[in-house]
Amino acid sequence: MIQIGGTFNSAAAVACYIVMGALVGDAAKAKISDATPALMLAIAIFAVALIVIAFTKIEEPKSEPVQKAVSTEKDPHSAFSFRHFNLGILAIFMYMGVEIGVPNYVNQYLTTAPDAATPGLGMDTQIAGLIVAVYFLFMMIGRFTGGVIGSKVSAKMMLTITSGVSIILTLFGMFAPTSVMVTVPGIDWANLSVITAQVPVGIFAFLLVGICASVMWGSIFNLATEGLGKYTAIASGAFMTMVFGCAIFQGLQAFVADFTGSFLTSYWVVVLCAAYILFYALIGYKNVNTDIPVE
Figure: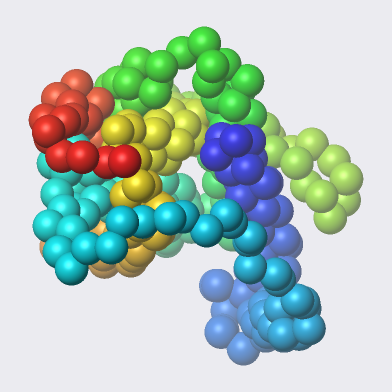
């Protein structure tokens, strides 16, 4: 269910890059005031969402009262008493560096001028948005596929394969010759037409990371919460707090890009994150605290 639900998240991301690319267009090359329509749209969406939430009544889930023996002793354990859970929330933290870092810096690399301090390809902003949307399209397809085959393939196997392949794809994207070009398709929803663009083959490798990242969240969650029993609910909440990792790794990747003068070099941050996830899939997921009562 986590993978199937994630397809809607990826679908929204695809739409976001396409719509923002169409609205902003060449504004990035002119002045920030030209992006006002996009800003107004964002404010309108936020306002509508706020109104809907304010007037929506959400009932608390009803559960049967649990009879507990009267005890003055405080539970000495929690979800954080499990090593594999602690390593798991760190894996989710690292995962955000992969999921967000790859497409964002593909977009930066494509649109930044070749003569900038950190040079890029100087591609049209709208076309770049359509290309980056392919990453999230791959994520949507991957999550749907992961939801279908999830009962047949273990979370450990999925996470091991996808994290390993994502490392290979990222390294290939970093070191592939920029002179070798491939054609990447995209959909121009504004004109209801299919567009194509020539990009370095390494960019296409970065886009393929979307398929790998698509099932990582669900796989990490399943492995990290396995065997937690009564502590699972608290563990689920702790997982959601780790999404701030995207902000941390975006800043770190930006620092590396500025320091080295290369967007491609900044992808070592993504490799580091994916390498930790691979470690978790192979070793860190093991529950070594089976002696802790969870009933």
